[in-house]
Amino acid sequence: MKITILDDYQNAIKNLKCFDLLKRQNVQILHKTEKDPNKLTSLISESEILVLTRERTEINEELLRKLPNLKLISQTGKISNHVNLIACSKHNVGVAEGVGSPIAPAKLTWALLMNTVRLLPQAIEGMKNGKWQINIGTTVNGKTLGIWGYGKIGKKIAQYAKVFNAKVLIWGSENSRKKAVEDGFE
Image (cartoon, rainbow, N blue to C red; front, side, top):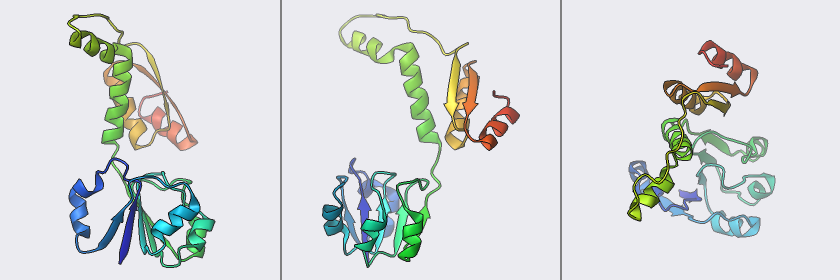
């Protein structure tokens, strides 16, 4: 069985514990996203399974026509508009999506927010240059944070903001907004 893992630009897939599950399979890992459909086809034409790393490669009708051996697409995280599900069905290609965890993206989002308000990169650079407390920064306390969507990640960010005493405004689908209000957010 030929398995191709696409878009591992961080060269991280082989180091994941779950990669051990594939040790007896014929696995090809592509580290660079190939946008040219003809070049991509030549790289994956023998593949029976594609593993997509997020939304980096578009799977459309044109590409699927050129992949007669393809039986399954496995997507890390949720499927988005980069995979044409109707075309996959037409070509008898199954699609599986991951569930993912909101923890890492929520933590990264919060870290970036804190870096912005506390000016941490500038303070660290100052300390590297022998200067102590080159800035003061501000706090999240009392500020308003807008969050687009109230899914797994949006909920975590809203909880973090609440702990830091920020006002939280949620925008998204009607169901998202309703759930946010039920959880005490605007």
